[in-house]
Image 1 (cartoon, rainbow, N blue to C red):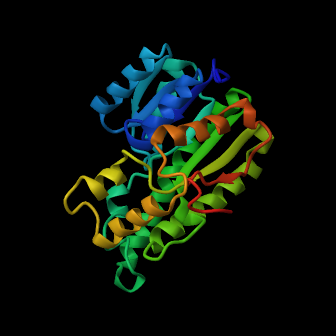
Image 2 (image 1 turned 90 degrees about the vertical axis):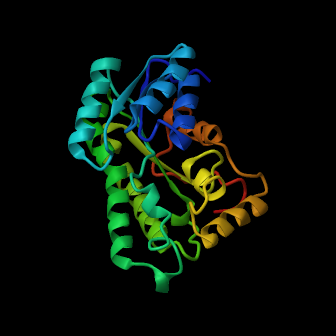
Image 3 (image 1 turned 90 degrees about the horizontal axis):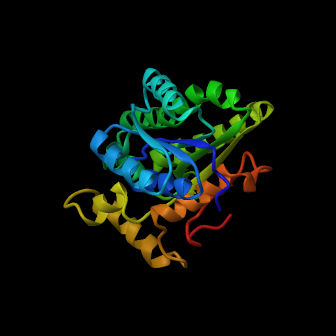
Length: 266
């Protein structure tokens, strides 16, 4: 399971939650990691964990919704770690908005202008980092891009108009990019998750007073009750990403998988 030695992974939102779990699992398989985020203190903590595993790591600041930030972050990664082979587009940049009852709730009650703005910003936050990375992936003779998004794009849930629209669009974009970038030997795959333990969404629902609506929390409680294999940890999602980042999946591109513990089937 050390087949990522010599590879450099750039993980957006790598300072906590799912992104941290992914960064740690990729490092465990031998990759060096560029941890992207907006909080240097959180980033430093994750970098320290990775370095303790014997891998190289650095924190690179930047907002995924800014092309200038992503260009600078990629250049910094190349300068400090030597290149980019793996891009994990995990951060969305609009998590708080995704939990707002004005964006997530019954269709008649949501603010469609806010929902549309959320969709646009969320798509931008996933695609800009890939666009910025393409020249560097080409320089390495190819690579792997893994999008992290919500299962709502495959199995729509009532009350999730904006989330379903954003995620379904991203899934289709990932398939399109898998075709466009195949000539450059850049593989593009998509991982769709539902509730994941010990993430900002988990904390907002179960550890923060008023962090989500009662309707939203009720949906999460149903997930916990109904998923046959239980709720995944961030590290378990990281294992799926590690597979897509590695040579084990060298013939897979344009693939969409849903590690939801048996909650959804496709």
